[in-house]
Image 1: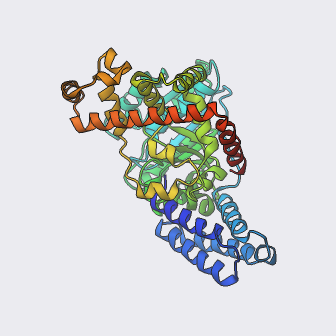
Image 2 (image 1 turned 180 degrees about the vertical axis):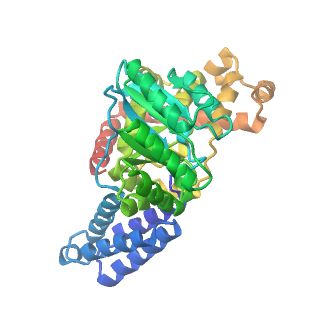
Image 3 (image 1 turned 90 degrees about the horizontal axis):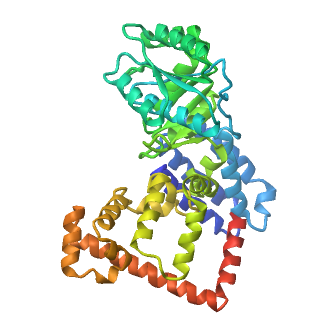
Length: 450
C-alpha cells in the first residue's frame, strides 16, 4: 500500500527487534533512519519532528534500556506513536437515520469523489437492510460526471437525482427536498471539483453547505498527491469545517505522506479509506491497523474480515476436503482465483500478511496474472480441467490460442498446479502420522503472538 516507505520501515524495525542490547546512540541512529524514510515519503516535516521526538523521549528511558527485550519495546513505542499521529481511534460516519442523513462529498477534480459516493451508498445498503439511499449529481462542470454517477447508480441499484440547467447549490437543495418527501434515509451529494482550489469553488461549496446543512462534510484526498494533500485539506477545512477525510487510491503507488500527515496537521479525522477501483473497495479507517500496514506489520484482522465477506464457508470446507483427498482440480483452482479477485488487489492483500512489507517492495506483482490464469483455465475442456494429465502438446497450443496467452504461460500454470498437488499430498501424509497437530499448535501460537 505504501510501497517503498513500508519496505524501509519494515527493515529498520526488523533490525531493531534483533538487537539484544540498546544504547542511546543506536536508538538515535535508528530514529535518524526512520526520520529520513518518513521525509522521503513526503510526510510533513513538522509531523516527522513531533513523531521522532515522542519516540525518542520514550525509547531512551531507563525502562527500555534495562528491558529484557529492548528492541521489541522500541518497536512497540514506534507503532503506538504512529497510531497516535493517525488518530488513535475509529471515527465512524453519521449513520443513515432518515430525515435524511446527508453526506456532502467534496475535493479536487480527479480525487475520486464520484466513485466514493457510490462506494458509500453501497456500503450503507450492505450494513443496514431496507435503507433507502439517494445520490445527487451536483458536478455540472466535469464532462460526463453526471453520466458516470448514473452508471454507478444502476450498478448498485441506487437512484440518482439530477436537475437540468440548475446550479449545484440549487441541485443539492432540491435533492434534499426530494429525499425528505420520498423518505430517503441517506442522501449523498456528489459536488464538483476543480483542478486547483479557487474562490469560486469554495463559495459554491459554502452555498451547498448552507442550503443542505449536511451531517457529514467529507473531503476526498488522493493519497498519491503526497504533501500537497495536507495543504488541500487545510484549505477545505478552513472554509467548510470538515467532519472527516476519505483517503482514495490507496491501492496506487502512494508514498504514505498524506495518510500520516493529514490527521496531525488539520486535526480532522480520517474516516474512510478507498483501497481499489471497485465499488466494494472501501474500508472504515482504523488508525491501529493502518499503522501496522505502514510499518510492515501486516493487518490480519482486515484480511480475515475481507475473507469472511467474500468466501462461502461451506464452499471453503468442501474445497478443504477435496485438497485433503487429493481431488482438487483446475475447476476448483479457478473458483479459488475468482474468490481471491473479489477480495481486492493482490499486492494489497499480501501487504496485510505480517512480514510481507519488505518482500513486496522487491516483488513485481502483476495484477493481470489472475486474469491470465482464469483465461487459460476457461479455454480448457471439461475433461482437461478435471484431469490435467490429458493435456498434451497439441492441447496446450490450442489452450494458449484460445486464452490469448503463450504455450509457456500454459506450461507454467500446469507446473505450478502439479507442484501444489504434490505439496498437498505431502501435508496429507504428514497429518496421518500425527504431524498436523504439531503444525496446528505452532500456527495457533504464531497467531497469538501477532
